[in-house]
Image 1 (cartoon, helix red, strand yellow):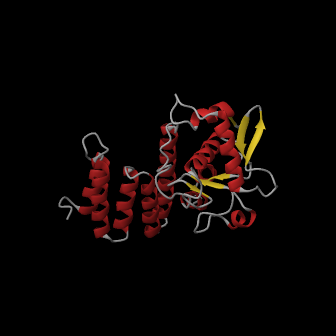
Image 2: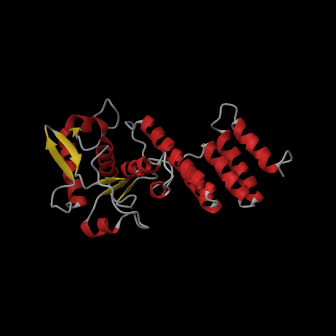
Image 3: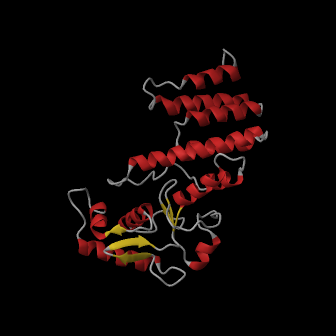
Length: 264
């Protein structure tokens, strides 16, 4: 786990009050990429540099590896001089950390890393999830889900991006959303369960566990139109993903249970 600090709940613009007062650095990847709550605030190469450093953690990333990652493809690494210039420009753009240090630190041996005060929403999500999963505590799970804005790294088309990591992000979001929605249903808070299921589906529209939870929540609230709408949206989401274009049997069975054989 990175040493990136877990901060307070982000405000509407994606930055906490502490970030705004102290000139913080927060990289958001649980949805379209944001830097300090903004998309497009930096040049694409600068944003890619920050994502690479944030995902690789506080152990640092070697100069040579950064040259390779920031090249057009594996066969065309970025020249070392160009990388150094990019780091200098990005440091200037970001300003200084609260302790006066650079946000992009040279940690020795040709290794670069983000300052320990930098925050990555994926790491924050993992901290909250670890506190809540397997317990009956909904608060940390709700804090985790508030960080989710869409499909992880949705607009980051970097050749080096680990698709296994992206899938792991989706899986953990679905796990957290499922646990939180289950707790809400158990507490008869049907509206909260439906909201949580929808938030998880932003990250993974193919997660049938969440479609089933959404249908159950709408049914428990007496909203049969909501059940029908969730079923129709599930069919659309699954059509291009499942091998046969059909939902799982468990989803069919739940739809019949909730709506009857007619389903109308």
